[in-house]
Length: 264
Length: 153
Ligand SMILES: Cc1cc2nc3c(=O)[nH]c(=O)nc-3n(C[C@H](O)[C@H](O)[C@H](O)COP(=O)(O)OP(=O)(O)OC[C@H]3O[C@@H](n4cnc5c(N)ncnc54)[C@H](O)[C@@H]3O)c2cc1C
Ligand code: FES
Ligand code: FES
Image (cartoon, rainbow over all chains, first blue to last red; front, side, top):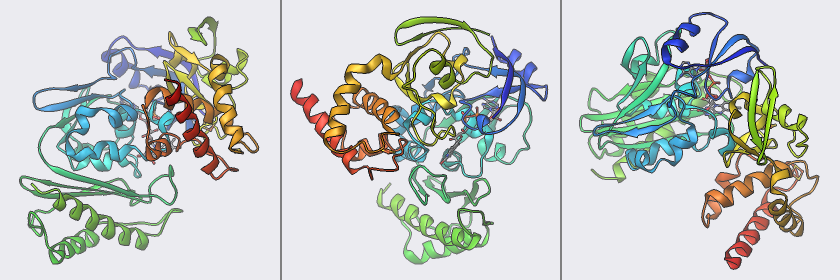
């Protein structure tokens, strides 16, 4: 269990950023993950007075404050009227409603957890993170950046008409996933993300156009082999690397078929 | 650190260590319905309502509840008793360990979802683990309870 000496409800992001430069100071999301560790925190940095819990819709995007909860992402009808409801689908198996009412999207994406469902899903959307100092960068870059002491302020998802399918496999309801898989078809072609490998989600683009708009089984098989060959799967207590590789093929095929069936 | 919040509509003010967990704080204030189960946010036993929404008090800092309304089963005795009878009728309570958190989340669900489907009920209550019942008797109790509430409208 962690300990906290001081609790600072910051007045602005500059104060949060300044405090966060010291190693013993920590930004709080919903603390679901932090609490499982044993850090001795000097100053706990609470962002909840900064109005960052909102999901805002603009002309061309959704802007989700870092303190928005996973449950907000699940129940926001504007957000889920896009992307075939994949965002809701990606969070609704995470523990329970009570958990999702406090776990934040900021903590979830900043954490870049290997098992992360929302990270896998957001990777196949046109998603950006807004960092206080580094500014706006694509999620696909952020995912591989080393951890630093910046503050994740917002997640920005550009609106478009891509078709999306999100799938995960769990041994038992509410457990961490053994494998996560998101598939999307954009105007330019197909994308897939595979997570819980158990390493963090990896984005794969169908740059060679192996898949047509509504691919036949043999096209799917070619893409599946490509993904299986170019993705590293490892073992942990939830499953072996080989098992994950097999699951990835199954979920990928299902995802591609589901997207194809949705038409244009 | 100073804290003021409402527990079951009563204003409470105190001075607490920064890392006080809400569950500890509530029990210290006499809310013994709030039970400690797994403490790893997996079982749902410690469920309370914050501003009407169910949360896990074992995984929430008390200071996060600053200025907010917290409801425990002590503040929902009538509703809890009413649903508890449906649970007992169906044998949906065996050792009873899971009941406090389960009943709190059922009450939260009836407030949030209008006429939920079986699937929606299962999804809403997925975070409330029960080692005894196999969930079927709990589901029957919920269905009967919702029917009764519909009839009473
Ligand atoms: C028991 C359990 C089961 C889980 N199961 C799943 C699952 O099945 N699928 C899944 O996808 N996830 C799962 N998770 C992860 C969970 O969904 C959250 O992603 C996780 O708890 C982090 O969110 P949080 O709000 O609790 O962040 P915290 O625990 O508060 O923070 C996590 C990290 O992010 C940092 N941080 C938080 N916010 C910011 C910010 N704005 N800027 C910079 N840094 C920040 C914190 O300092 C900390 O290092 C599980 C977690 C637990 C504890
Ligand atoms: S005691 Fe809080 S979830 Fe188990
Ligand atoms: S009745 Fe025993 S755990 Fe639910």
